[in-house]
Length: 513
Image (tube, rainbow, N blue to C red; front, side, top):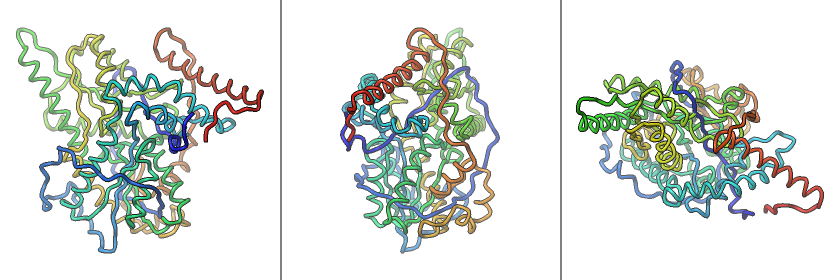
């Protein structure tokens, strides 16, 4: 059904949810310094594109970093690299089915019980084949493909320039997509060719989740273990960075601009009746609820802390708005996802009399189908049908100058810790943590910085294995959550039929090279 090249990569998926609009907020945590351990990579890399327009007016090299610390500069013998991790997306309509296969073949996205785990490639093929036509319609609506590769490469070029011009570090920045080109293996091959000695791994997901950053890190772990050429590559991972002041300020800037614009639009139309102040609506990508409740995924808690930090910054600035909501979007399949769901929350707010929304895609730093089609088209239509007449959507950060500069600062702050990584591959995480400063060992971060191996060992050791999501059985008529459940059951019945066919005939139903 698909060629080996198309199937080269396994998947990582988008996530979602919804319900009544209340955002729980937990106490804040301070992140400590990174850990470190030896690493290894592999593949070919596409040249970076020109920086985004947002970075055209660059800050001079003498401008201060957003961090109060002053990390030491790399030595002349160091060759510094930064590896940006992202999801990836189909660039043409013809790419969609293969992209979906890569996504659903990933056990961190779709996990089957152990006795039938061998059938995951078959099930991924069935799901990709059945979902591709609907997904292609979505991509067709946004121009025929995902812009995520172009944006991520522009972010990489902007970050590389910021490191050179503001931090004085001659670093190279690489892009590694999980489910489409340029694949992680390609970026690793470029890192090897460039003889990088010190690598900072930086997922472009502000919050950590096993299904996003975690999936990419597991792939890196596998590459590091299998490629002997990477034995001398030192690295450190910044697993999440939602608490950084530059990110928080950049998000607050974008939200404040849209809130003020909506208020200006309203003031032009004012007569005897004034519309209410806009409601700030944070829409985050969802994850299966079981990942949080049973596997201990910190995503939900980090997301709630993100909202608290941004709302505090808006309040500090005196921005006027009518409350805020956190909801989750992009749910797929016959499982329960984090709630409240975005569509349900929009309808609930409309019933409460809210007539203006400023929608914030909070877990996305680049535009792609979840922002351009799902939010801009699907959820806006839900809002209009529910009676919400005013709608503005905050753009993704993209190459926002403040955001890029803050990522550059985060990279420089992480660099000293790669030296703590022992060369080779035999040391365990405890031994490698022995030389860490107390600030690194005592961190209260949900996912402390560290090496790929140390992070995954800590995560898997402290938490249960990723569970098989529980399937709910309620049925409703129409294209609803229940119909999504039945879509999943149909896929499972199709898998069972394929297995029975192969047992009965001794022939393969699908030839997957």
